[in-house]
Length: 552
Image (tube, rainbow, N blue to C red; front, side):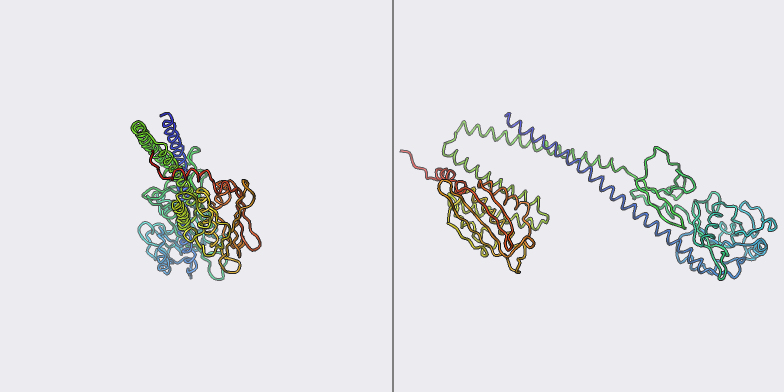
């Protein structure tokens, strides 16, 4: 009972250790998988945002390239571009024509706006105060046309944009660099309007170096950079270029608000940079759920399952072991064991355990090191078939040993017809037969894997001899594959290397070596004949298999 308790405790300890290891591995894998999924989703989102920005910047360049201005003071200048603008379907809030007018052109521009039917054609500042042409001495930028036209956009026409700092900086840079430039985030349409960006593309007439004006497009920031769905793994925020430590975010309704990043606030999971209007914009991505917490919960579940399985296994083992012990005691009390039956059972258990141990080793090594399941299945079937064949040969001889030549039959190893066998016809013990059968199968199965130097299958010679005088006779075996080389012969599997270099030599109490010559692959095995034949095992088997004689 003490031994049984010790075994159950050992099984429980092993189960707990494996449960903890499995939970740890699951925790690490969950963190890795979540990190990869989040990174991929962020990369896709940033790529889509960049594509969206590039498309809108392309619209501005196309519109400025198609723009023809016979006179910058004309109204309705966007009407010829209407079809081109809407063809892009870029969901802009408002498109505008901003003319760069001299002070002497302001009165003519106001008349043009009045003739075009705008509700307030006066040239005026952003605050609504009229502009005195005699009070200014340099060109000003006036909004002369908008698209689409509605009650909310038409009231913007006639405004001088020089007083708006963000728009003024955008137009100055666009004029200086001669390319599309984006503004800082600004309210659109009205002071309390949605936060967005304006993009200005300079329009340069033929033969003139300075821009005659600008084609502008404004977009809501929520749809431009901060769009996100409810099922996404993250939320996105835009670093406000106007102030350090401030981010712009959009809610479910698309309303953009600013927030200050606190020092103790978690850092963003990732940061990506997109380009729009000759400026770099930084997007911060925050994971919506904690990957660490989810990984910990999964690890706890896995650990709990492992502990539950450990408890079940220990309970079943204890129940079965206790019942076996009880039954064994009852049999000992009732019947007892006869000496001969005990010997038979012990020998049978010994041989079955040996066979099961070998098969277990074959299965474990083959499946552990088999990179391809089809190759592993063929190797497993072949190795078990080799073991089954040698057991059949031993059964036919009543476990009195096996002729060594019988292990080279076609049913024992593949491609036996290509193997030239020579050597004395000796009988080997059951243990030696099992090891040699697996050894011959491993050598024969690998001999067909590579292509030979002359385009043929390797020609194989297997020979053995017994040297020395009794009782120090030595068994020497040599396997040589011709027409092969280290470059053409596939390397032995991990299981094969263990069998060739360790298992077979140790089973026979000998040594082995393998090497390549210039034209062949050679494997040599040397062992004492006392372990190859093992007369002690043969004598024990003869006693067990002898017929029972009635007592006199």
